[in-house]
Each structure stands twice: as C-alpha cells, then as structure tokens.
Length: 302
Ligand code: AHR
Image (cartoon, rainbow, N blue to C red; front, side, top):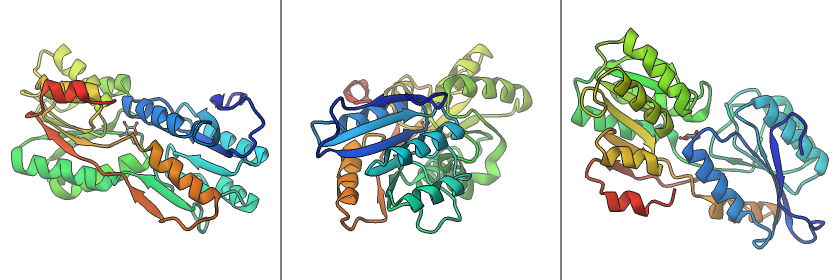
C-alpha cells in the first residue's frame, strides 16, 4: 500500500502475465457520482477483462495523487490513468511520466499544464455544456430567480467549466457564490452561511447532487421549503439526486454520467497496443425535470 498517499487496492495476486498493467489514481470518494465512477472503473478494469489494476484513492489531495503517479512510474506500469482533483500543479510529475515513456489516459477531469502532449487521450463529460444546459433551464423557467451558486472544488475542471457555462447564460442573476468542495457536509455548511448572507436568495445552482442534498438539510433547518422557497438546480443525476427531484425538493438535474468504465477499458487497451485513439471521448449526458417518476429513480443504476 502507498504510505500516507491514500488507500491502494492491487487488483491481482498473480505476476501480471499478459495482463495490461494499469495504475489508476482516483481523486477521492467525495460524492455518490465518484463512488459510482470508481465501481464502474474497477468492474471494467478487472483481471477477467485482461487488466492488472493498481487503484489508489487520493482522498481529494493533490499531493496524494502526485505520490501515486510517481509510484506508478517506479512500478513501470503499462498505462497510467488519473482523474486530476484540480487543473493546475501537474507540470513536474507529468514531465516525469513523459520522460518515463508511459502513456497517460486522463479520466473525467482535465489538466492545465505547460507540458506538451501530456496525455494520449481524455474521456469525460462536457462540463461547460452541463452548466449551459442548467442555465438555459433557469432562463426559461425562473428568469427572476436570485441565485446562489454552490461551487465544486475550486480550481477543478468540473467547477471552472460548469461555472463558465452557467454564467454565460444567467450570470446576471447570480447574487453570491461559495464552494462546498463537492461534498454533502461542506455543501450544507456553505448554504447555512449563504442563507444568512443572502436572505433574498430564491435559487441554488449546485455543481453536484451531494452538495445540493446538503443544501436541502440547511434550507429545511432554516424553516424554508426546498424546491419552493428556494429552488435547486443540480448536476449529476445520482439516485439520491433524482429522488430529491421526485420529492420536489430539487427542480432540475443535468446528468453527468459516471458509468464509462467499459469505454475507458477499450481506450486503455488501444493505448497499450499503441493504436491510434481519438484525443477526446465525450460521455453523453441527459437532463431531468420534475416529470421524472419514482419508477425511473428505482431503475437508476447508481
Ligand atoms: O468531476 C465530476 C464531478 O466530481 C461530479 O459532478 C461530482 O459529483 C464529483 O465529485
């Protein structure tokens, strides 16, 4: 196991044989989305499918991710895959990986680096479009709403791009912003403070469902009705988030689909073979309003 660098699972007990040796640095376990993504990645990068996976959870700390990446270089894995917690701060380690000749597959979030050609391919969602889709629903359905924006981890691709997409459509309706770091507990704390600071607030735009679920707790504790007194527009579409939509506590949810392990496995196989792959693969998202049914929620896989 990695010392002080997050928790490590080594997928296989044999010596690897013909398996593709993959080091995967997951950024954390901060949300229902992340848990579903980790399950999907582990199921697809299994030994039966031809992989020898070393999976390390960085607990939302960049230094843990950097340590894991260096461990993967030392292990001389065939492919390094990682979901970067924030966009910047990777130059040195990405250069080290490049010098080692190990190909990088970027997963979910993106990097902002001076290293040239730092990764072979990236798979993830179009975060900016998710923000735009949320903004378009607001423009159409709540053009007078006074919006507090509950941001994800500051400096992460998911936060930066969702904020940009949403702000381009309804930026003039935003009265305040704060980060809840993509977790339920920090989302709740941020909304408790926002309810004091912005008593005129009538809507929360949250960058993920978990923070929105924390917001529900804060709103109810303040004696207000989520979904009515304060509308909630969210991103992810995990089962708990869609349940909140059925319960009329959320008003609109833009999906961010975490279940792309099979596509990732296919890309990694091609990269390990040295085959040409597309520079990016966009995972397709849907969107849901309060017409969603309990049966839809019950059928949700994550
Ligand atoms: O990077 C994807 C985002 O990260 C998801 O929307 C969020 O739930 C997760 O923590």
